[in-house]
Length: 446
Image (cartoon, rainbow, N blue to C red):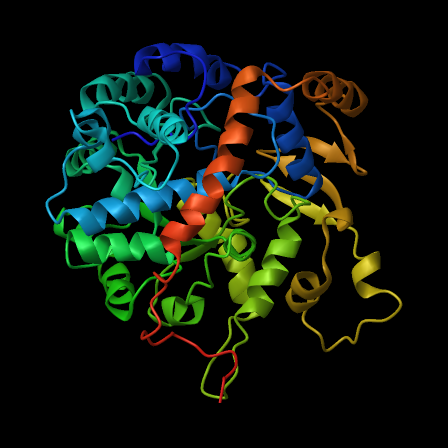
């Protein structure tokens, strides 16, 4: 099932939605993007980013602060379904069946009007497989198979528990047929892991393996709650991981066992999960976070090195975005994608000659040190000045687009998140497992 977590406005049918959003693809590479799209790219260019993955959810842009409803309500729904039934029904049956109160999130403790609003909101999240697949075929035919040098189509089912097996198998078949990759969120939170244990008596990743879904073209985002068996399966099938350190910390998801995952030989890329979730779009900061977050106590634990972290951000990121054959390294035959750093802030007032430059860059580098950005031989930033975007004009567009009253839909969404949050908190109370053994220990209670 397609993962339209935030579908709160706009077209009501999936094909209509695609028609509504395809202009974004049509305008790749020029100023046809919405102002907020260009802002993201401007910020990332300043930080030295050349390749990005945009996961287009079935969502209209909603300019509101951090919304707990998105990140908490979905897991509440998912966990409840897993507890209530071991044989999964389709989401259409779950939220469109005759008894929504039984299948949708537990609203029994909510006031009647709030319960109905909440059920209605959550029921908008799904599209029938029959509606989704023909449109994806059209997109693959138009934009896939390397028809565009800088565009790669990648399938992106939101998460295992938000998709029917039918959808997952269909996407795997389509990705294989068209030579695209697949990016899927996996066990980001403990509640997603619990869903798998209740629904299938195994983790979501192990369920994917049963479906024949895993492989070198698959990138699993997060994998915070991966078990030892999960990690072994990733290694055996060549499945990749995208590590989103800042996001996992900000959303209280946990810390992925990257040390074990690397030791198993799994390819790990670095991501930010969302364009601004580490608050400054600085990929150097993200590298430094990864480098230091996994320096766990114990002489027997080997933390990732600066070289490994740089590899995650470059070579492995290229593979995760399905551009591994053309970018990620500087060598003959590959695209001239590179950044030039001004090393003064890194080397001054003194850098011991014995310190490897990679160590210095990963430990000390910041986005402000990026002087020049080159994409496929084209200079898009020089002397820290963008060559393709009018920054002042863009900021003016942004201010005009964002400095406005909230729409009625945005106001409703914000209000609903405030009203529902206490009930979701109550639902989750006491569900965190206490008898599990962590991969690593950062401290001890006794």
